[in-house]
Image 1: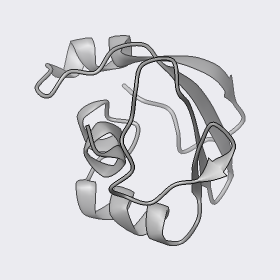
Image 2: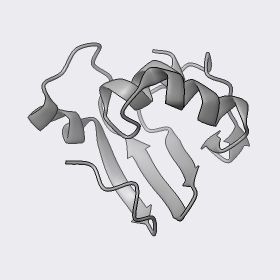
Image 3: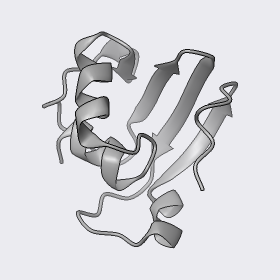
Image 4: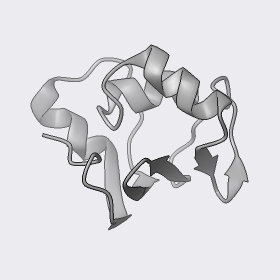
Length: 89
């Protein structure tokens, strides 16, 4: 699955266009490397997203193309979260 779509489906970032812009500006990393929006996401990858007020680091647990809001948080496991914006409901 594309990185920008994964960020949207997992609700780490609420809109795909915002996810794409974050990737293009170099604020999203996969396994320590800057990632493009089209980068493939695989299980056990570590995604790091730099927000204005901190950073969210998460491990990809599951890749699903359609998921309900309540099940979205099952797609990843938070490793560290020091951002106020990255609080996913």
